Length: 438
Image (cartoon, rainbow, N blue to C red; front, side, top):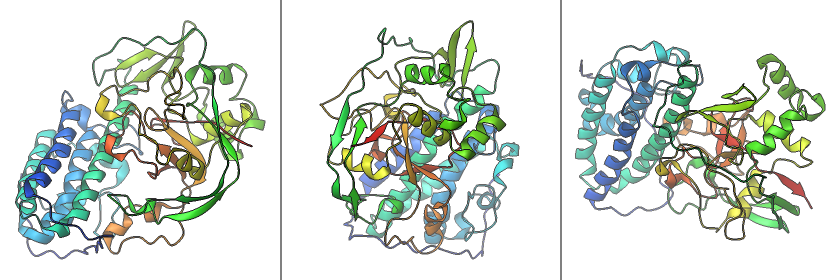
């Protein structure tokens, strides 16, 4: 199916490294690239072509599309500019697998990605192999100028690995057969009663927030700047399913006094009565997971809740959602602990207590909604050209989540990492931690 393209001119990006980068041994670059790319293929092992093609909603993308789009990124921004248009795998793939880069060219409509029965999953894998071979040649030069773009491309692919997992879960949840993405594991058993919440107090004051430019960061994590915090306290763990059930039993979903106006309107319009994927049968609550349908683990963090739901719960609990500055300041400099994608659990773990005398679970298990809108930091400026469309243009109408989840790549866990979604979205592994004023 390969058809090369010649003589096309496209808008290119300008990527200005934030620091001088020394050339790395070429073998190290190839090894790192290969590891990330191989992991994407490992995630789709066991999926049929139909599994990898179907699209369960507009917000989700087929697994096949994730595999192709991450390949498109390297072909579009690395291979074609350095090896020429003739090395493109197929003349239509730049159109099919562009996501939202308007300055690069037109693209296939996002809600229709599930209609792409062709190319097949095998053809997409062949596309990946073609681009990988060209990337190996380019990386073998050890050109230090490639480093910032390689870092971004690999981090981009790891983000899509997370999206692939959450999108497959949403797809399988629509199937009455409740298929399993990975084999079931024994259901963990928590305490007969919930673990008490330990609150950690912080004096506030002037704090430095954001990345300083050391090591790879996404552009939205900086620039580093000062912020002022009032005294506050944070819960030592995420909110659990047991606590969420109490909220439900006390009519949390039907009390308009707990909800933002848009949130309560969404509850009514969507008929929300529980977190996404929860079903009640015979007096028990079950949840769809990547390992099939399971009884809800009461002491695991609640997940698949929207910002609206998280905000309402916090109000019901006599608390509030933390700001992203509060969370970042609280964990800056602490060891990174958590249950990430590399563990292979693909599910939040039980919350059974505190770790190291500091808030536990800030990293891993579930993304934590904050009360902070996703906006630019002071003096933020996106990169020039097409690559500037990566984050900056989404800084409107979305809310920040912090930490990471059981589907997040380990290497993304850092105090400054910012995730963002619209407040009604809940198909990600999103939960919450409570905060209070002091």
